Image 1 (cartoon, protein in one colour):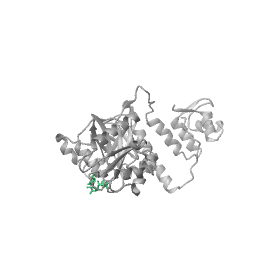
Image 2 (cartoon, rainbow, N blue to C red):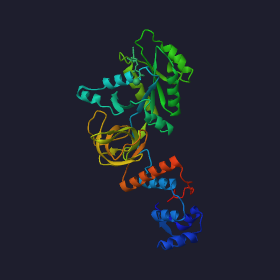
Image 3 (cartoon, rainbow, N blue to C red):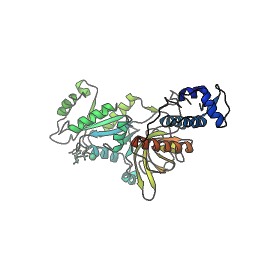
Image 4 (spheres, rainbow, N blue to C red):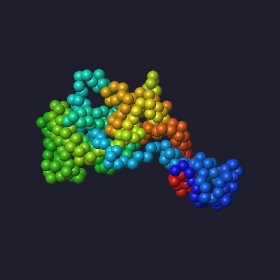
Length: 370
Ligand code: GDP
Ligand code: MG
């Protein structure tokens, strides 16, 4: 709805309908108490009454800008899991990710392995798994703070010769707080000093009981060095994904999150985004944080130019006017002008938040129903 009835507008502004009608009259708009005015007019009237409309208008612009799609049985399609690898320093996160990634690179893609976009997809059992390869990255901190971690499954890496360490506990807590399914990879099994039972014992002290001990946590002994257990680990990721019944609607404007972003001297702002629902196409206008732009070029994790990216697919995009922040939401939109308006509002709000220069007048969701 793009309109509001005069009497309603008056009550939200806490003034009389007569005052609103008078104000509208002075603006050249002739209405009665039961007639409606459009959104823009309502905004002008609100400001005329000294209402510093900020958040309320943002809400409203967002309502107008972003596509509202009901997710139903019919439009939801299975999507691949998004996995993050966590654990104590030196327990083998990077080695494990490298092992998983390299095992999956076919000779034709070998050149693509140098590509680093912060996320990549591997095939296991004929299915795709998306890995975010930036644990401890600022995006995670930002997303975690908003409770919007873009992942489904956490692989908790614990070195079999070292056991649970402080950052292991931290990782467990983060994964639990983000409601992720946890799979434990007991790493460095090739080492003679490996003691997986000790790891399992320590895990129980943190509420994680392995399946073979009667619990519900999948524990897979692996070695990033020899490759032992890696296939099984990926199989367990697929199994967990099946249980989670991960789904998204690919037939809508894309929405998702910025994984990382940087400025490239020659090419301008570049962002890696993870599509969470919908499908992103080249040519789409997107808004990410306070950046707006049209997707000019899109590359997948192998560096290959692609025209579209669906749910759970990470892509690197070019075309934004500025660099968004890791952890920002992004969305494809139809109305570029409105997107720019929203960006201005966001910048304005951020400034206001920062300096608290004036007291904000709350209008009790003034425009939330407009
Ligand atoms: P991260 O800090 O968790 O990313 O750990 P790294 O992947 O950098 O690994 C830390 C060290 O452990 C490196 O020297 C790796 O070579 C070694 N490492 C990792 N995985 C294994 C493994 O499965 N077996 C053995 N023997 N060493 C490993
Ligand atoms: Mg590392």
